[in-house]
Image (cartoon, rainbow, N blue to C red; front, side, top):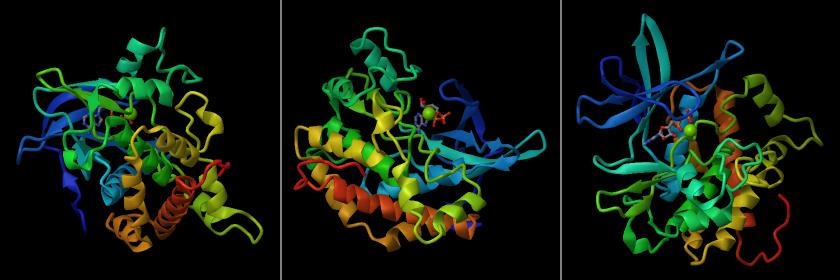
Length: 314
Ligand SMILES: Nc1ncnc2c1ncn2[C@@H]1O[C@H](COP(=O)(O)OP(=O)(O)O)[C@@H](O)[C@H]1O
Ligand SMILES: [Mg+2]
């Protein structure tokens, strides 16, 4: 199966480098024999006997990030034969250079917030204020051109814009990180773990219902509004779009304009090309993904419009 972004990789015979202890489910780091790059294999999960869509969600979101230049881990769809069973999943390419360290956001916040608990239900301490402090001494990701003049926090705002665009509610403090080079210089790490986006866990019946709401019902527009910044302190009552807009207003420089200008230049056709490039999705899944991306892109451009003084709930 060949899509625009290449075939599904058979990673059965790749060398296993290590287990990944972070995250909810068991994962392994593998080494691509062609260039020895390391990739995290993330198997698709099944809930109630139904295959979810973590793999295509991870793949599409990585390509969507690329449309506006947000640094994100590269993703390849993959399979592995394990004990005679075909396991489907996504590979997330390591964005940690050899010899560098990475620290989760939670590690930085533990230094700033007394008794910080990354699993706290209210996400106490995981807010834009403490994240600004945590990133104050960091450079933007090394793979981003310096000539853009962005701060690490500006780039973090890019992650929040991406999250709102793809409806990713899972940006908790272990789902962003900083890199430390051998000289001790810190950098925001490229974005990763976008598996919980674009309604990856819905079934087609639900997608159909949301897409074809009876006249008078809100449909996709209603669905996207349910997306909340719930991994942030007080984020449960704030939409992902409003959270991204707040963050952009906070950013000291006008670096966020860069993301918004890139976003404004994205077309429906480009989003469609990304979604269509991934093989094996049902027609409803594609239609749903495109409807979500389009709706959120417009909501974001509206909410982040700098001429809008008083943000309204959206
Ligand atoms: N592309 C990547 N480069 C480097 N480290 C990564 C990458 N993707 C994930 N990780 C690390 O692996 C951990 C688990 O991966 P993640 O994608 O967050 O899976 P989960 O869905 O289980 O949370 C992350 O918290 C991070 O420490
Ligand atoms: Mg994670």
